[in-house]
Image (cartoon, rainbow, N blue to C red):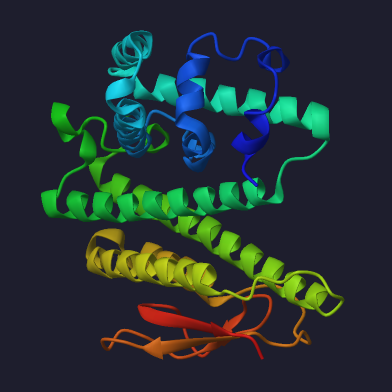
Length: 313
């Protein structure tokens, strides 16, 4: 069940003034599409968030224009034009407005039903992971571009927004910015790994509850894809770290490699738990073979580039 399937049946007065900056009629046209976008997880004025926000604005306008076809009423078309004019040059403001609308809708549902649909929570978690993986891929491209230029992102007007604000500091030498960016990327890699481990734990718990008659979704394809995506971006980041070794120095290079190995080579949990195997197959001369227990603890090597296959025992 989607959040919209509940919201669409509620009276407009239950939502207060959440539609002050975005017409409710357009929100109704968007339907479930709105809650299936990562509005909640887009924060900050960095280049990545701005790019994602711009893409969402374009996708939203396209959906609004195509939803009603030739039968759209004149006032709806006017509202679409008004929204485009208001947010075309500031898509991050649109993100904030639509995030507030979703928060208002969730609050209204909670006031009435005391809970949100489980499928909504699951979808939000998927959106968070997907966006985090996209951010990591953006980081890798950013590192590669910086290395190819041989200069910091702030060396010219066109590149002034190519890096997150938190990586800027007055008087910072250009050679210190590549390590800062790589350190930031490894932190984000660790955050993504924690999400994968959490999902593995949830799957394990659901499997245990199934023994008591609870419903159990045996399809492991989504989790498989998560693992493969994380493996791929880790491999790409590892390549960039190794290529930048001379610029980083031995001590920092060792630190980054250790953090990278820890991000995709360790996990917590009970050693005695029955294992769910995660077979990591060699591919293209860059892989390793190993296994993971129910806590996501990997043995047999560090993830580089490989295909992951989950199978319940």
